[in-house]
Amino acid sequence: MKFKKHISILILMLVTSFAFSQVKFEAKVSKKKLGINERLRVDFEMNQDGDNFNPPNFNGFTVVGGPNQSVSNSWINGVRSYKKTYSYFLAPKKQGNFTVSQATISVDGETYKTLPIKVLVTAAVDKPKDPNNPDYIASENIHLVAEVSKTDPYLNEAITVVYKLYVSPNTGVNNWREIDTPRYNDFWSQNINMKGLKQENGTYKGEDYRYVILRKTVLYPQKTGKLNIEPLSLDLTVQVPTNRRDIFGSRLMTRVNRTVSAGNKTINVKPLPEKGKPIDFTGAVGDFNFNVSASKTELDASESLQVKVGVSGKGNLKLFKLPKVSLPSSLEVYEPEHTENVKTNLAGMQGNISDSYTVVPQYKGKYPIPSISFSYFDLKTESYKRLSSDEIVIDVLDGPLNNDSNSNTTNTNSGKQRVVLNNDQFTFIKTKTNFSSINSSYFFKTPLFWSVLLLPFLAIPLAIVIRKKKASRDADVYGNKIRKADKLAKKYLSNAKKALGKKEAFYIALEKALHNYLKAKLHIETSDLSKDKVVSLLKDKQVDDIAISDFVSIIKNCELARYTPITNVEMQQDYEKAAKTISLIDKQAR
Image 1 (cartoon, helix red, strand yellow):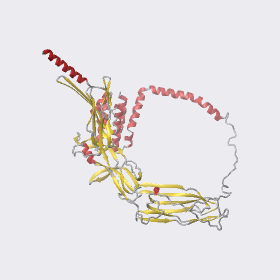
Image 2: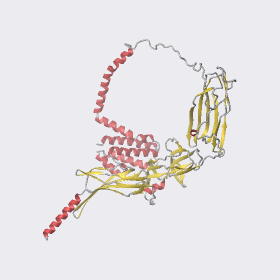
Image 3: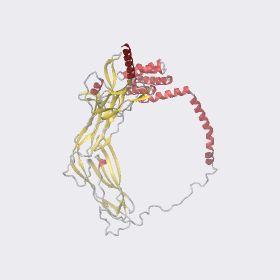
Image 4: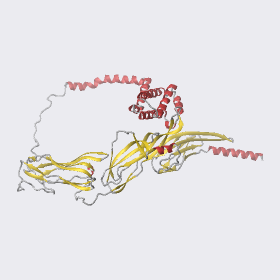
């Protein structure tokens, strides 16, 4: 019996050892269905310590946190339990079906892979209303609104869409990026150029807010009926207050990522009325003036003149055709040159367009340019209007007579006519010329010849001197390190220097510069690290305590300065201290 008992224990130990020796490497997600405004956690777990962990590329997601590494190692009843986990926090970029692809790791020379996991991203979902939840606070205090000037325009009537980002006074936005840009199908569109973002005060749903205008767009609908304006969606990094306070009694802030959308807008486009529509109407909508002019009314045959047909005013100037001129067949007419001088602002297109015809008369006589009419739809009166030009008479004073006509006035004809040319048509072009030498001397053996010949030989000693200086500079390791550090500090702090004098913009740029420096120098994501962790990493790089203390104090100043009064002198001091500290850390870090 004792022998059987020992055999049983031995078998049990072998099975336990064999089971533990099996490597498990798997991926787990916090949820397989989530809204575009939610976050996804992905954990890669292994039961043995491995090397060369390689995460997937997370197509369709933005990594907003991680990798965070945790290790659990315990003994229970003589059995060892080990677990190592790499965690990532992801934000969806858009709706759809996505796959978290395979991660790989090496254990004892063998490569192990996780299984792919499918994830469905849906439209935004409602979240629990927890007043202490940073995500809920951000959702209540950040709003993206699309303001449409008119929801029932006529076909080809200008409307504007202004996108405003509203932020409550106790909340801040560090940075933002577009994840869904609207495509204005069935509209002629043009974005209005904006010089920087200007913060303004306003109200949203009866409450005081700050807002910035992100984008202004002018639209001209090209179809009737219900047209859809796609939403603009942004991914924001938001600073929200917490219940914790610092030693001065001020609320501490925390950062969360937030996706906001302006929502779809539907425009009901009305057709232009059929009643009273002119036969020659080409789609002009607005308020216009019409003019037909000639550069000269008296000239000789074979001379040229310009006949200009122009429309000016406010409306869809780029979206209709100008009427054609009808000229006598005895006038040679070239294809018109079209010019546009149109500016687009929130009121729509304004300016003028024109067609300029070059006309060359062939015979002596008087040639009338008959009246031309232009029709458009007037939005103020909601009716069609017609404008007509005056008749213009071109008097050709000198030239051959037209034998095909019994009078000096040639009848007009709107159809295509054969142009009759005379023998003097090109008399103004010179066909003979006299050539003369511009340089009678030879280039050979001139001072310039000898200079060009000897210049490469004279440049050789200069190149040797420059090369020696460069070699000496390259050998100066300490000096190069100092120059490189100073250059790096200036590079990261360039945006902060531009914002000196503007408190909020300056400290946002300064904090971003410090974080970017840490990312580049320590190869880490600073958004998930505490100040203690930063201090530890800098000490590992053999940076002295004074430089580390200065660096941490600057980061604290950036966080507190936005909520306390700061003078321009203090901002200048913080900038100089940051530049000096970055340069010092870069010299000392190994």
